Length: 93
Ligand SMILES: [Ca+2]
Ligand SMILES: [Ca+2]
Image (cartoon, rainbow, N blue to C red; front, side):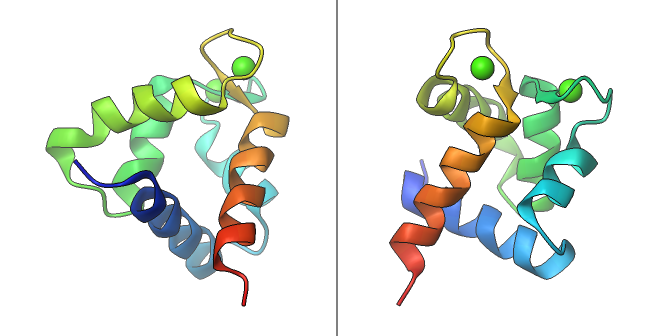
């Protein structure tokens, strides 16, 4: 199992390599355009972030567990942003 730090780091790399802003990444992965990421959409994000296929489902659940503040089983923009802010805090020099 990858550590949370490693996972967030891979997501950070994905976003900075392929998107101009975290918001653009969020919109890209929100395939059904409902303003929230569901588990399947997060699994796709993890795939793009080069996370091993066998653990994507579990990591996706873990991320929802950690960042779904209002408990609706979706990650909305505010929740996504708080995860991204955590990454930037951790990796800023
Ligand atoms: Ca969605
Ligand atoms: Ca939520």
